[in-house]
Image 1 (tube, rainbow, N blue to C red):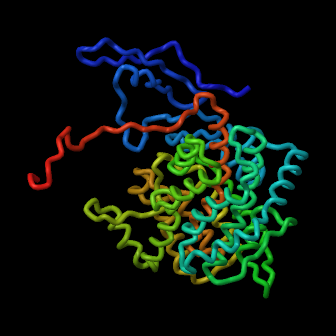
Image 2 (image 1 turned 120 degrees about the horizontal axis):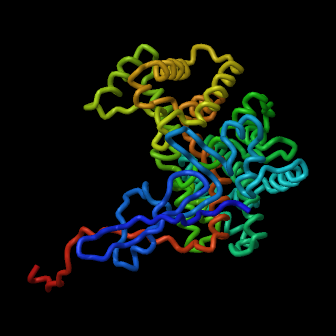
Length: 435
């Protein structure tokens, strides 16, 4: 039995002038800070103000734990670096979905299910033609992911555990197929269908880069790098897109619609678009000799320019995902033996500066996972506008795991954030000739 949030014997007391003190229970999780339970405030006629919900726990969860101050990220209790180097993505999918790493028999069965649901209904391919050829792939993904509910409506009883599990398998299986198709459509190439004998990562690379004219031979180093990118982006606690999925799901919406909501939220440049922004920054710098100019601008408080790919809102120490991604990045660059690539040269020099310049070190502006993943994806030939699509592909398992967990939690209820109204007070409508 997994641990549950427990009420401690302590209470926080809220004193409001002219009112009786309000005692608020203090709740303890398995790990992390103590939490003040403010649910009783509503009955007293009060609620709290917390823009961005940065100090508010909207749910309890058993899936992911983050300690930003110490640079810790755990999936179901396992450190992210161990999972990235000792397992593969499908093992992590099983872990996030079911709570434990699979044994050999469980893994074989899970892998079989995923591989044999990768095909999509053939009519779905016709939906791509409704989009402009130059549409951003994330726009396509938002539409197509939501449309899946029109084709797989035989398992949409959200209260049935078997339906939820089958839907989870379908999403894990089919999102890579849709992601690769969104890329192929954008460049005018025919769709490439999945191959069941390939690994999850290798199959995605195959669908991305194979053509009817030439089979794509998957490089094992690139395959491993892609698998690690998937693992490192699989979940990240209650971020904007996961919270979007949970909020949509709290209304009873079907899981495909909820995943589409997550994709839409992830598209934002402050969230999933960060690695796109990082590559565009490297392109803006252009050459190594221009780096001092941009470093000076980044240090200038009066200059709006900011270096993308450095530091993290959550992690005040080194992003634990970046440690693994840095080593993987260097493996990929060594394997590809890329010579005279100005963007990668700029990235390498920026990394060196960030790890040695006191300005960056004192402010914890270390290269983050977006910095390294963007370099890897660029090096293996994936266009910048596909970066966030790959993020969405990897994060699908996190979204569906949180959605599934929410259905099982007895305290789950429809989300309804409050507001502070700052508009006009009550007033009366005047006839038009008096306005």
